Length: 525
Image (cartoon, rainbow, N blue to C red; front, top):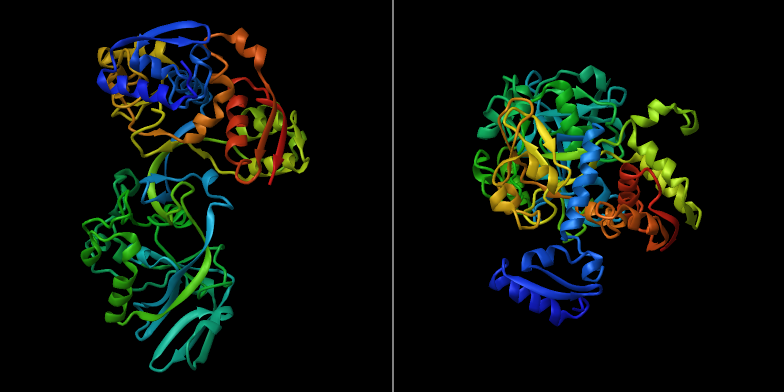
């Protein structure tokens, strides 16, 4: 059977549709291979069926399970809640690896400058600027730079506050009445733009991750105050930053540090939930005009302008990303130490996967040589690796969770069968994909309860990075694998690959074997 011929693959597809459990025999390079149609499909990536590389093959999936088991045993795998880039079309999170640099496009959005009336200073207001008006429904705080100089200005009958370096953004004549430092504004309270929304009135806020707001008794409307934040600048905007912890990564961290309520307004398709009044049911891409109209009606709108900037888009479908609060699974890359790499102790390296990968990078010949420096730079600056996706089809992450909060990672099909307490009969004979693998339950080591597989699937770069092991039978025939590993040569275009394919190859090889997956790499633009 020739897997390069579309008609052969179509014939296999038809048999799969007829009855996936029918037994068939196909010709492989080493002789006939017999199995159910589903088993044959699951073995397409093995040499016995031609050696082609199929990411959905059973061996490819179980090899990633083996990798993740090793990661978990080292204590590097964890579930974390964060505000992440999110594609509302694909309905999944996008990791840092997938958007840095060439994941951005030059786009024009409408920015809005609006007024936050100060509660204890009648007739006075903060001027706040944002390029994401949809996030104003979730405002909780405002941030100023502690050492920036701010001005109190009069325009007509109104008095505004903004940073001195952004006075140029005011429209019309104004009179500077006073100057003060950002730290002098700390703790000022204000009225938010949409405090009448049910979401803004709810104690703690609104999020599907209830554990994040436990113990927070105040609502967003009650919590509005000015915070100090060293990151506030005056290169753009007004020098006063609107903070929505449910809609921005930095906002989320600032909210955690200050115990702020949390409002996460949109679902996985970018649609507002049912506690957002007139905006409920609206898509994030169509809500700007209604928000501007509402601000105008409330007397809060100062001005709307076009703003051109680099903005992240989905690397698959090019949809504009939003930032959304989600729970995902990550591989901890470890700390970055404040000293040269050569001075690190073995214990320090053992606690930081990024440095272990750097040692592997050093053993590879990079052509041109700057490729080495680029990869090292990425490893120094990268965040933890997000490995989960909120999708249905793909690598079934081998993570089983218990209601008590304990989780366990399964390393292969043998361990799964040994640990199974129900559902094995439903799964047996199928490839390790949903829905069949989800039927298997295991016993919790901590409380004795029943553990179920998490619904998440894996980041596709796991599929790409495991190739040197899955296609060369690392689990099945170690001697055969060692004969061909590592690859002599990799040739690939540079853009994006330092943080994607090169990185995933290097990270997975470091964890599994501690050696380089290839000897030399030739990169080109």
